[in-house]
Image 1 (tube, rainbow, N blue to C red):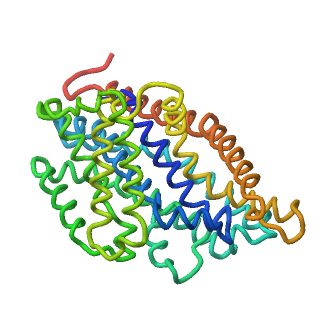
Image 2: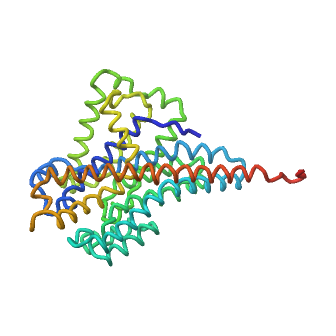
Image 3: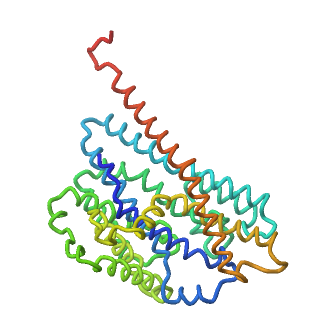
Length: 383
């Protein structure tokens, strides 16, 4: 099992979450909108950070899970390894997710004079959808029809958690045909017009991440290593142009094509491929890379917390700011407050929730493994 931390993958996580946070400034921290954010959105949008997360998840999960499942010698062992995987994922993801669902629900009750958190009714349903992992289906249904609630970003978490449930079963059922099934999944989505529902069940980037993980076990993966990017300045230039190009592709002007989301998935997977070698191809080591990798290591908490942080700033502004003013009146001050609050809360979440519960899940899996190994084999008498 490969647990090696890939710093370049953390770099991409940092870029992905910063893109999503920036995308959500308009309409959440600044509900009335800012002209300069609107000008940027006309030339580049950064919601593709979610697809980059999907590609990373497919790659990171598959590179450790699939070798374990393929090494199984019995059905019982396959089930035990699948169960262990689900336990680790549950302890990694659910405590933080449920905590912030609860806090947003409480905020809609007790910290909502401004109405920033939305109605209690919408947040009750959003909390239920988040806990039961159908937030993506509810978000698709609500899109431009009714209020979802403050936890709308949970649609992508629900999709990832559905992926984590299904991937082990797909690996065990498809076996040697897994690559062809994943390729078909990618190709079908590439040439399909994305309805609202299909936008919130898109799995092409995740499938490409899994395919990349499978490729790393082959000799051709090393032969195709992009060593040319080791030349000074070439990798960072590619990274900047790639991010800007995907931002341009994500603008509303490309809604007319069937292929936009699929192309974004391919481009995100290409970045993950380059990062997978962990050779500093995308960005040389230094302060900037260390900062982005730090952001990447906290990206899960930042993703969960950025919307409630934005809404808390709006609520505080309503209560404490000049009468009738909004964060849009002093955007730099509001942005500084939101960033500071987000970083503080995500660090607390990382140290107080994510790390301890991740370790607790690993310890539970270890104890289960120990208890299994202590059971005597048939025909063996214990002392």
